[in-house]
Length: 330
Image 1 (cartoon, rainbow, N blue to C red):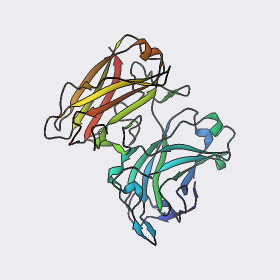
Image 2 (tube, rainbow, N blue to C red):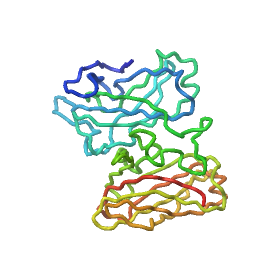
Image 3 (spheres, rainbow, N blue to C red):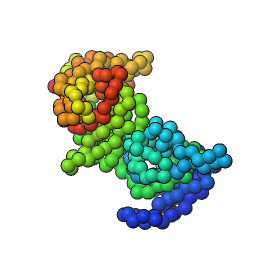
Image 4 (cartoon, one colour):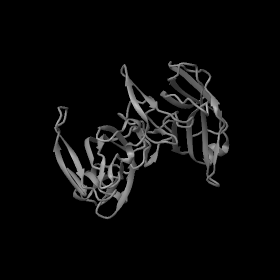
C-alpha cells in the first residue's frame, strides 16, 4: 500500500499506457513532504543492497511571484531531486537518493525514469518492526512542487554482499557485480557518475545493455568505489578491462585511474591516470590497463576506487558509453 507525508491521492491516468493510475502528492508545504509506500520488513535481508526503480513527474511550483520549474529540472543539475527516507515507528533514517539516471532530460510536467541504490538496512531498522510501521517516502523537491510516482519496484542488487559486507572478492574479479550492465535492470549500480549525479544511465541497444555517461567536464565520468575486503593480492599485477565508445567524429583518448584509501590516516592514495591503448571515434574499442599492488594497498586499504577521465580539460566533452568491466589479477 501507499502512504505519504503531506497530501497524496491515487489519480487515474488520462493517457493510455500499461498502468491506469499513479500516486499524486500535492499541497506540499515543505521539502520533507512526499509520497511513500509500505514494505514488509520480514522480506528484507540485513546488509543487502536493494535498488528502487520507477518513474516520476515533478510539476512547476506556482506562487504569488510566478511559476517556477522544479530545481531538479533546471539544467539537469540534480539539485533537490528525489531522496528517500525510512520510517519504522522508532526513527526516521535517510536511505538513498537519485545518483544515476537521465537528469539531463528532466523537464517539469514530464515523466522521467529514476533509480535509487538504497543503503543496506541494519538489524535495528527491521527487528521487531511490524509491516504497518515500516514505510519509505520520497522527499526533497522544494515546497509547492507536486510529485507523481508510477511503476515503483524494489529489487535486490545482484552479487552485492557477503555476510553484510559488500563483496569485493567476487571470485577473481574485483567488480562486485553487474560488470556487464545486464543484471540490475535500468540501474547502473554499482557504478555512478563522478562529480555530477544523474548523468549516468543504462541504455539497451540490439539486446545489449551498457552505461551511457553524459559529460560537461573531463572528470564527469564513470566512478566505481567499494570498501576493501582483503581480497587484493600484494605485489601482484592487476588488469582493468572494459569496452568504451566515445561519441566523437575524431579519435579521442580515455584514461583510467585506480586508487585506494589508506587506513592509517584515511588519506586517498591516487594512482596515475593510465591511457587506454586504443582511441575511439563513434566505435566500440577495448581498454586494458594494468597496475601493481603493494602490501599497503592489499592489507591496509579501507576503500578502492576506479574512475575514468577524458584527456581534454577544455572540451568538447562528448558522451561516452561503457560495457564489460572487469578487474582481475594476471
